[in-house]
Image 1: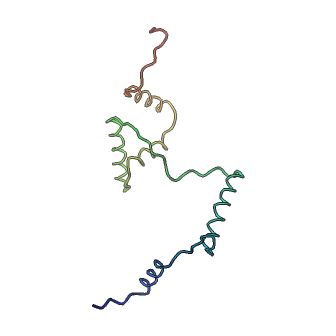
Image 2 (image 1 turned 90 degrees about the horizontal axis):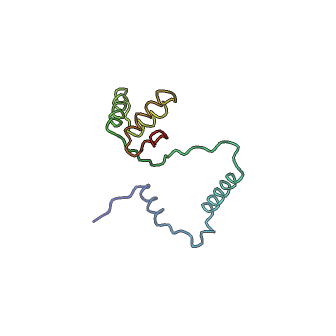
Length: 131
C-alpha cells in the first residue's frame, strides 16, 4: 500500500507540529521578547492615566428582564417592522435600539407609571393621610 504524495502545505504543517519547543523559554529568540515588552507598556500607560476618556467595552454585560405579555408583544412588533425594512434583529438589539431612541418627558413618565402599576414587585407607598 502506497501513501499519496503530500503537498508542500501538508508537509510544512507536519514539520511545524513536530518541532520541539526550547527547554528554557527565556532563550526563545523572538516570541518571549515581544510578549514581555507589550504588557509592560500597556500597564505603564494605564498607570499614568490617559488624557482621553476610557473606551467603552464592545461586549455588554448579561442582564435579565422580566417582560409582561404586552411588553413582549411590543418588542415583537418592533422586530417585525425591522424585518420589513430588511433587517434581521434580535430581541436584545430591538430593546437597545428602543432605549437609544427614548427621550425624557411627559410621555416617558406616563409609560413608567403605567409599567410600575403592572409590576407586582413594587408596593404602593403609603401616604400620611392613609395612616
